[in-house]
Every structure is written in structure tokens, then in C-alpha cells.
Image (tube, rainbow, N blue to C red; front, side, top):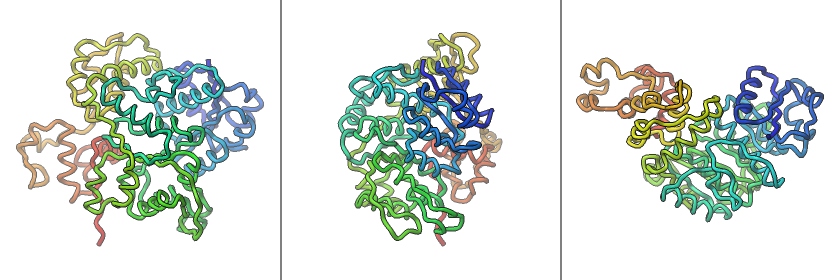
Length: 468
């Protein structure tokens, strides 16, 4: 059994993380500070150390030097994300922003321990949805897919991964574009160096250039010190830019220079610095169409689109649905101490006929929800709750009654036959030009966060404000 040490001063986070890892069959110890960890344990006896960046006394990065042969994963809040970049340069194997997703943490632990086991020639891998690591480095150990479309994806990954070629991964939200990026990095000559992942849609437009390229002290209000950017942090490794279509125009121009000249210039600096970065970009949007409207630079598009890998939506992977579901059931059952769960025949039929607008992520969420609610060993259709897709908004009474929609140009009669997903998309597209995000959320009866999440899942970009 692999041994993991958690160093975290917040008891609630430490306890939750300990339980998560114990449910995944790891031997877990914990401490509240670096000094306490060193006093209580022999740091060299652990297979992995997971530490918060900011701790009382010495920072979590101190563990990198105190246990040089043990991989260290750093946890950090979004506000200190750029400090985590410095951690990677100091030798941390990975960083995760808090609050983290449980699956994200388990996947990171799985990959780190798998890499260390391969380097050391021994050791188990954590159980999860991934296939066991293959001796020949097959990408199937990160992604699952038996259908012909996914086999073509795996073939492309195997061929392009060993090269330095820039890759554009295309696919709907929830299809697994980041997993493809991980496979490309892991099978590349840069696998020993960091893979830095950036969601361009999740970072405020005013901060994106600073996050990517870094900044000098005093370059803008609030820049109290010089910071290293995420591109520089990926020097020698790979940079994954998710939702590249949301990148602002100024950042697009800067990124083009990175691809053309292999150099970056911090915000507020007059000096450029050479970097060696393998670029992997992903989007659910049609970048070619965006170049015709001026939303995306055409020269940058052709620089990114050297090799294109399309991840098929789940509705095109009919033969993979059951296999994916069984892996999710095994994973969630182990985590929640509910072994032996299975799908009823009716559940299988419902899953095979569902359109899966949220793709693999929707399937995983449905299985997690069903596992929580299941009181015996059989998952029934009602537990999967696929008809409502887990939506927490209601169609307004005016539409249920057949009254005209707020936008008088819409087709009120068509709304009677819309599913909740269709209604959401129809309502947002029809009204986002005249309503703010807050007003849209209020009309739909959801939070702004839920509105943003559904935009991402359904591929509905936020309307950019026009310049006056």
C-alpha cells in the first residue's frame, strides 16, 4: 500500500483529504506544519507528500528540499496561483488550486505515483477510472475508449506525442480534452518536466496576460512584486491552454510571438526571455469561423492548428457508454464504501438512449449521484435522474402557460416542446444581448455560478461587450 503524507494546517481540509485518500486504499498520515511533519515522521518513507503552500512556520515548498527523493504536490488557493508556479520551478511535481475537485486530486495522485513507480521499477497504482498503465506507454492508461473513433484518437496521440508539434484538441465540453493533453505530455520527451494547465475562460480578462506572461513590479495597480507567468513555468515542459477561443485579442498577439519566436516578455518589462514550451490548445468553439468574424487571429489559428485531434462526443461513442459507466461505478463505489453496485437492465437502456449533452462529465456526475442515493446494490433509472439532467432551474410560469417569451422575436409555441437543456440554451441566446448575467440568472432561477457552468457545458460563449 502506497504511503501519503498530508501537510495542511486547516483541520477541515486535512481531515477531508485524509478520508478521500483512505477510501482510495492509501496509507495516509498527516501533520499541521512542516516542522511537525519532520518531528513525527521520516519524510523519506512516504511515496508522496501533499502540502499546502502557505503553512505556519516554514512554507510547504520547504518539504521539497527536506525530502528530495519524495515527490511533493503543492496545494494553493487561486489568489496565490502564481506562487505555485515558483513551487514547480523549485521541484514540486504538480500543483492543485483550492478548492479542488476530488476526481482532480485522485487523478493527480494516480499519475504522480504511476510515474514514480515506473521510475523506480515497482509499486502499485491507485485504483480509478483509468486503465492500468501499459508498459509501452499506451494513452489508454489515461483515457478509455473501445470504439473506432477513440481508437483513432489514441493512434493520433501515439504518433504526435513524441514530436514537438503544436496540437489543437477540439471537442465539446466534457469530452475529455484535458485527458488528451495529459496523454500527449506523458508520452512526450518532456514527460519529466511540468504540464501547466490553464483554463482561459476561468481567468478574468484583466488578469489573463499577467497570469500567462508574468509581470514586473509596479506594471499595474496591485503589482507589488515581480511575478513569473505560467508560460515561463512550463519552460522545458508542456503548456495546455484550455478554451483557447476565449483568449482576448492582446493576449492572442503575445501568444503568437511565443509560438513564432519562442520568447516571452512580462507585462511592464522591456526585456524578452527565451522559453522552450510544447503548446497544446483545446476548444469547443469553431476557431476557423471565429477568424472570419475577427474574434480570433487567423495567423494564430494556423500556428495552433498544425495537428488537430477531435475528441468525439459521447453520443458518437455508443459502445463506450456502458464501459465508462462501469468504471465510474467501481470508482465511486470504492470511494463511498459501496462495493458491488450494478446497473439495472432498465438503467442500461436509458443510458444508451440518452443524448448526453454534457458528455462524459455528465455521465460521471450521474453515476456519482446514483451511488450516493442507492440503498441496495442496483442502480435504477430514477437514481440516474437523466430526464432532468440534474438541472436546478425551473421554466418560468409564463412559458408553461404558453405566454410569450420575454423576447418578442422568439417563437413561443416552440418553447412548449423544449427540454430543460434546450430551453436554457434558447433563453440565453435570445436574451443575452439585452440582459446582464445577473438578470439572466435571476430569470432562470439559478446563481451566476450555475449560469457560467452551464454556458461551459453547453458551449454557449458569453456575449462580449461592444466597444463604444
